[in-house]
Length: 268
Image (cartoon, rainbow, N blue to C red; front, side, top):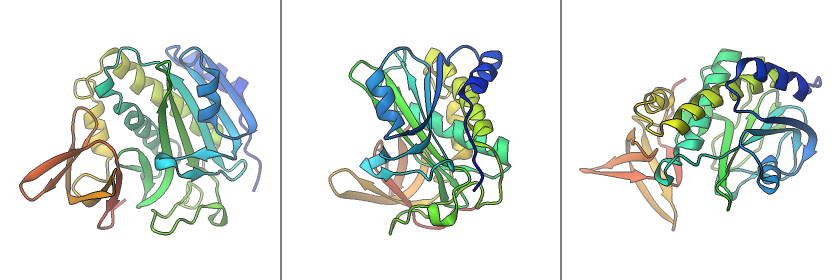
C-alpha cells in the first residue's frame, strides 16, 4: 500500500481560503491512542481539528474498539462548542456529521454513500465509517470520524453479528485522505454553522437532507435498546430532535439511543 500522508499545513491554507473561519487549528500526527480523547483532554477554543495516520485505542459507539490500519483510514476529530444549541437538539450533532461524511464520500469518490441511523456511513449495506460524539464537562462536543479509505480486506475488522465493513478502495473508488478530509471539513462547517446559529433542523434543511440520505427509513428494523430491551417495527421518520420513529402496530415510538439492525437488505 502506497503512503497517503496528511499535510496539515496545506489543509490549513486551503480551509482558510475557502471556509467561514470555523477551523481555528488543524493538526496531523503519525500515531495516537484516540483523537477524541486527545482533543477532549486539551480543551480550548472551538474549531480544533486533529487527524492521525494511525489510531491505536479508538472507540466507536457503545464502547466498541476501533483500530485503524496505518495510513489507510482517515481518523480525525473536531472540537465544537455549540453553546446556542438547546440540549434536546444536540443529538443532531453526530447526525449532521454523518451527513457531511456521506456527502463528501459521494462528492470525492462517486460512491453512493448512505446513512444508517444515527450516523453509520454505508455503501451497499456495508459499513464505511463510524462516528462518535462525546460531550465534555465544560460543554465542548468532540466528534470523531473513522473512514476506511484504502483499507484492504485483510485490514477490516471482523465482528460476528455486526455489519460487514468495507472501504472506498474495496468499493472501487479512489480518493486521497487529504482530499476527503478537506471536503468533510467544508461540509461539516456548512452544516454545523447553520445549525449552531439556528438550531431548527427543519428550517435549515438539515432534516430533509438527512432523510434523503438515510437508508434506515422505510426499513423493518430491530432496535436494541439500553437495558437489554428491544423494539421491532418499521422505521418511519426522524423527528426534530434526531430521534428515530419506529412504528409497531398502531404505536410509533421515538428512539434516541440504541443499536439499529436492518431486517432486510438495503439497496445502494
